[in-house]
Length: 222
Image: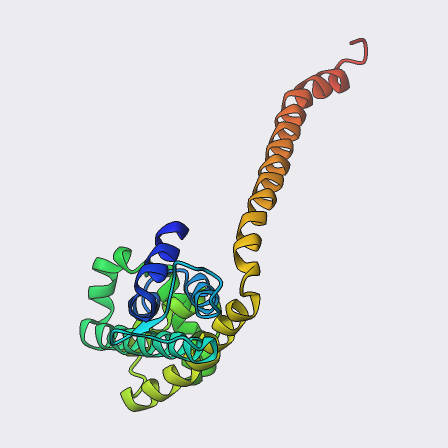
């Protein structure tokens, strides 16, 4: 999902958008890091047009707005993880291998997840949900490999808790600096693109030059 779409959803729908996006992030890569950081920035009052509203009432205290955003992330991520567990437990590997492209669950990723569970046991859930990228590929395999539901639910909640509160706290701390930080990153992207272009040009130059060097090595008279 494009960054602009994620930030727009959170700005317009607050805790409800955070809940839905974090539920999705439990089973597909949905930029959970950006979701929670931006949610924390919105809670801080950094954006005049964005407010945290719960059940029709605006939360005017930034600290409570932060708590509401973080809890929405935890609730969504935990429920999404439970849905992923059920999909893995009742659909099994055949279903995932047939339709895994929708979940970005390739056979290779399933094999890696299986090795992860063999190494860490049920605590792979706790470790996985606290690890960027990996956290989107833990719930479904946990169901496939029969991690007990009650244990999975507890570990999923515990794993989501520091992730959501920590990232929302980072966004809240950034506060009004968030918009400037987001703006300044475009210069980083430009610099990286220029560096990549220079590297590509150098590689093409070396590739074009190497046959001439080989010919000179083969014939010293050249």
